[in-house]
Length: 443
Image (cartoon, rainbow, N blue to C red; front, side):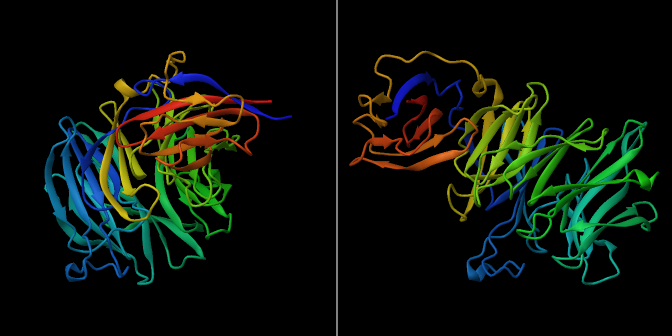
């Protein structure tokens, strides 16, 4: 039976399913990560290493790695430093505290003063094997009467892309190794948490081999090593966070979020992100107050979901291909590492105010003369006459982009031919406007 398209509801762009355009601030080339300390925001940008040799060569047209500081309230640039020792590793996984940055550099650890943005020590720790590469650092702190004291560093390191790596703990007081154990292939991120017995445990995400579907998450208890676990995750783990006893792992290869109940030591049902191919998810931020998660994807969008049941709530356009994110003063800061739909380095950060742009469930009925209209009973949506050039996207109920392209002045129709029956979101963005609508395809 022939299907027909029906305009189900019109969502206002200012406070509906899709946020208004973000505020953009200029930063260095390829911003990777954001770290907040009090009212200061540190942004780390990897520049553009054209020949991939790790050395900044200005005469070759390369852009240097940069470290910028912004005011968290006014967004004004406070200072900028060019990283003289070369480019960052990607993924960018330094150890950051309130006072120091511990940066991996081959088999060494560099130490920087955060407030002064100055190199303190170029080789605080040196792994004995020169072939070793430190891939991630986590700062272990303890509380005292003066606040927090930095006690040790947890390091992940490897000697190849195909063999298993190691996790080590080094004392910041004696500068001696305290612990080491073997972990999975290509370890790239470390976090710590306290279990239900108030014991400190570590979680290490291992990416696995490219296409090998052998990514793992390892948990390690220094007090009782027998409590450690290895969780088989599948295809290319890229990032994770821990909230209480729940770990949320972002799987770039299988395009899903895999929750892990750390107290019960069990995998929970995975949540599809809806991306495909090389447009997979990158990082995740949890807003525990509003029970939402924000996922950056290389599909050039931010996907919003419920942290309670995984329901897809919305999708934002950061005006670039996003990587690192941080929730600061009720504003989501998003690093646009690359340009939209491309791998040319971008140099912007998108700011989304959660107060103004996240009334996810507020809707208005279809208005007279709303910009999307239907062409009879066919599966074609007629766009307005005054559109000169705009980008459109059609997203299914699982958050997957099923149609995408540009609308030129000569062709102002969107066809739904070939799509199955169901509910879809249509967005149209141009330099002058951004609108969206829900479309129901029925029999």
